[in-house]
Amino acid sequence: MRWLIVTVLALFLFSGLMPWLRRLGVGRLPGDFSFRLFGREFSIPLMSTILLSLIVAAVARLL
Image 1 (spheres, rainbow, N blue to C red):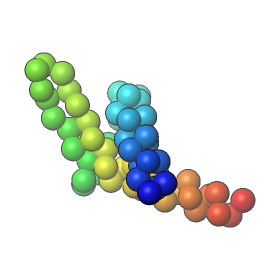
Image 2 (image 1 turned 90 degrees about the vertical axis):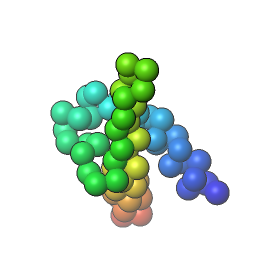
Image 3 (image 1 turned 60 degrees about the horizontal axis):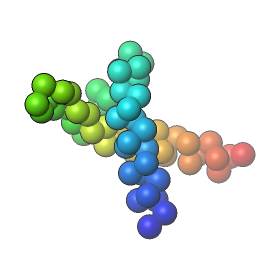
């Protein structure tokens, strides 16, 4: 249950930071969804969130 909460919070964080993260290549992986609704662009970076969560978990385990 804790991983689900962390994943949802990471999705909200990445959605807000998406304009800056696109410059780094985050949000362009297969599984990252982007759509336009009512003149506003929405991004759902599922795969980027999972990948970055795994990287952070691996670093935390090493420390």
